[in-house]
Structure formats: structure tokens, C-alpha cells
Image (cartoon, rainbow, N blue to C red; front, side):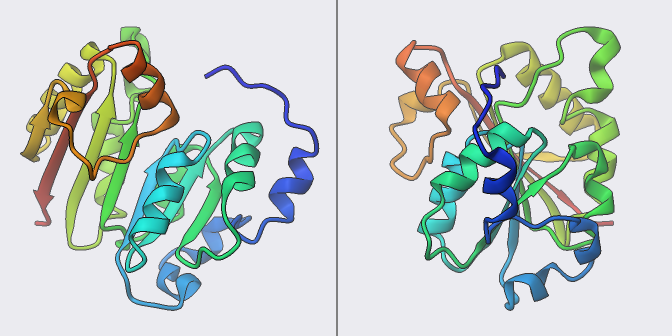
Length: 211
């Protein structure tokens, strides 16, 4: 993702009530952060925040946490959030540290248009690699539930394989999400862009029961 510098990004981040610094201190206690026992969904790599914000607005009985590692992009997302959202927080975090932030607390993970890391030597960086699937095991609450969207055919094929090998079963899959005309589908900024270019959007929803 190309990043443009955001003026006063540090102030935007630090002064937002939706941003939580040092998120590791909340590990095991995220329901106290939201002051309720509602399910917690996270988006890893939320970009400019359109998807996670719209979900929080639409589904008040679910708590949402958006994760982004780049300051400029995080600042842009925080600027978009309305003042009256009670079920949304955003974190500055590299996904590789995810298991240090949550412990058996997450109901759903969204992976939207993640970096495909196409070179073989970078496979472990893919968010659907066995390396990350192992980390997710430690943060899911009752069962593992991942919903992924991408425009990258190779990453999608790779992810189907890794999900299957890791014990997930496919709840839903499509190779052309736009053709479904699904009114419940909340689009990311990337998804809107790629759809206008008539690029197919791939989506998969997978579940794995806890042992």
C-alpha cells in the first residue's frame, strides 16, 4: 500500500478516544475494555477503516477492533470514525505480535486484501500461512472463524490449501463476490476500487472447532 504522509498524524492518533496504546496490557481483559460480554471481531490490516467502521455502526451487539501497523493509515482511519461509536477500538500493531495482545477472546478474524507476499521466501509473512494460523489458535475463544477477501488469485488458492491442511472446513466460498449482489457485503476501499475495474473478488469463510 502506498502511504501518503498525514499531517499531525501523531496528534490524531494520540488524541483519539478510539485508539488504544500499549494494547498488550489488555490481554485477557478485552471485554472489560468494552464493558460488556459481546463477541469480539478483529480486522487485521484494516487500511483506512471503512470496513471495520461500517461493521461497528451496523452491528451494535458486536465489539470490533481494527488493527493497522502504519501510522499514516491509522490516522486516516481514526479521522473517519463518528463520535458516537461505543463498540470500536483501533490498534497500532504488527500482526506478528497478535498472540501478545489477545488470549482466547476473539470470535472472528477478518482478513481483507492482505499483502499476498508472492515470493516463496516470504511465505511465512502471509496472514494465512501456517505460521499465522498457529498464532490465531491462541486468540480464538470458542472456535476459529476466519473470513477472508482478496483480489489475488494465487493468495486465495494458497489460503484454501493452508486452511484445509490446518483443519478448517469451508463454510462459504465464492470466486466472484460482486456477482452475488449481496446487500449485506460491506466493502473495503480496495474492494470498491477493484470492483470498478471489474476485477473478481474472492471470498472464503472457514471454521475450525477447538480441540
